[in-house]
Length: 357
Ligand SMILES: C[S@@+](CC[C@H](N)C(=O)[O-])C[C@H]1O[C@@H](n2cnc3c(N)ncnc32)[C@H](O)[C@@H]1O
Image 1 (cartoon, helix red, strand yellow):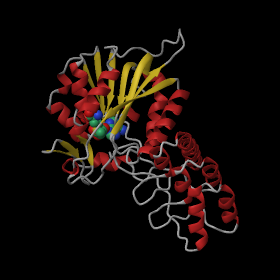
Image 2 (cartoon, helix red, strand yellow):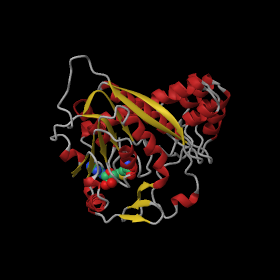
Image 3 (spheres, protein in one colour):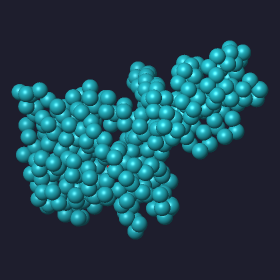
Image 4 (tube, helix red, strand yellow):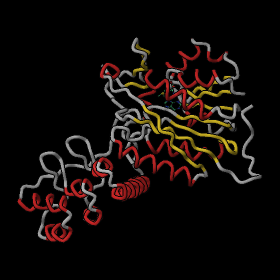
């Protein structure tokens, strides 16, 4: 999947198609009215099921908005993408949710998961590479600006102060046992400050960017109680460290869903039994339904690794345009943050690798 994990603000969109005939107008109307026979006949007569009108609506959106599940199934089978969006940025799933057609929304959620998982598997098979290698980010100069943001050289926000309450909640989740805690990605140190307030037995921080690392040293993080800093990419410094933790948080920048999957694959080794894992959940966070699909995909994949995920909804409001002034990547658009709390469920007797201290 080519989706970025979080902060770069990109979504996977379907393309609109052109279509001029009367047939397509009738197709949209028949889909809205629930006339499955007519929808089928119109497609057989050549109406393009992918057609989107001037508002960006397609037949799948019309059927979903009215809860016509038979037609939704038919159009998905005909190849209409689950994630086409209209001019207002809504996909068929958003419209089904808004109209409280729960089982229609569930159908589209499953279609979305299936499509994204197949796409991901295909990309892995074809050896797809992320388009922007991370070393470009790691070589850029970063700046901690007066608006309480960490910005890169291309005006992308790496971290922003409005996330403070979220970081507090993540710290609460991963420090629940008071044991050995790992944070991957220091940024502005918001979660690390919240972790320090909870006085865990040990507090390991992994950070790859030299400017951020310099800031950590300048602020004396290497001298704080229980703190160990591992400077380098987590890919390079963690697998060989031979450490295990009671709580882990992952929040990096300029990495892709594939990187996150790679990190998740380490969790059975990095987490102690009953340990808690959490991550910054910015997956496809500019559309509520896409976000829901990715939350489901992530929890299904974590389950295969032995982790049970619960999403705790937290209200969040960062809609004030001032917050995003001068920021190129508006990476958050939603009003609810789904905080993942993932617990490793290990069978008795499986003690894992040695503890962090
Ligand atoms: C979004 S910020 C983390 C913000 C942090 N949660 C906070 O509370 O301030 C992401 C951080 O991850 C670091 N990072 C990016 N890729 C990394 C990698 N592969 N390994 C370690 N750190 C990485 C970035 O340099 C940046 O400091």
